Amino acid sequence: MALDWSTFLLEVVNFLILVWILKRFLYAPVKAAIERRRERLEAVLAEADAQRAEADRLRADYEARQQQWERERASARADLEQEMGAERARRLQELEQELGRRRERETTLDERRRDEAERRSEEAALTLAAGFAAKLLARVADQALEARLLALAVEDLASLSEDHRKALATAAREEATAPRVLSAYALNDVQRADLESALSRAAETEVRCRFAEDPELIAGIRIDAGALVMRANLRDELRYFAEAAR
Image 1 (cartoon, rainbow, N blue to C red):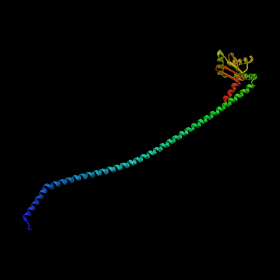
Image 2: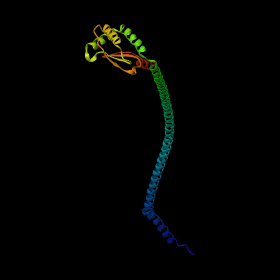
Image 3: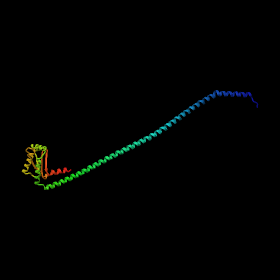
Image 4: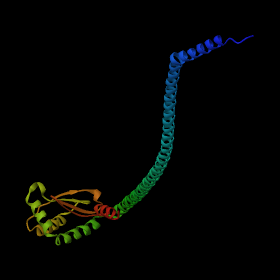
């Protein structure tokens, strides 16, 4: 088969024309599109890298903050435990102090109750003793004993204090407060006169008495002259003894 050079040349020319057409109308747009695509891809990759870097930064920041939070939480827990320990110790101390105060109060109350019980026992014993003594003295009391007590009262009138003398004189000058004499036994006229004379000397004024009997005195007399009270009888002496012994 013989080579047809004219046909070969036409084919070459056609091929060159086709290449020029492809380069002129197809390759350049395709290359430009590929370049734009490559740029967009690089931009996407760059953005992805930036986002990855930002994500890494955020993760690192989050991890750092989480570690900081862990440290702060551990520190807060330690501070809280310390505060709770201190508060617990303070409350235990306050509780111990309160218990101590309560024990002291209970001890004081027990001592007071014990003292009160002892005092009541002593008072009961003294009252009982005074009652026994009163009963015993009532059995031995008589007018002779009363006469001796009256004589002692007359002697004591000579040594009255100035205030008592003034009180006696004031009472003697007023009929409503005139001295009233109580005696366990009835006083005779001589005894009454001796007593009024002694009262008049003490008051430095005439004294007239009102006389009455009170068997509860056991023996002796009691003189009421206004605010002034003079006792010379067994009942009042026993009461005074019981009160003084408390």
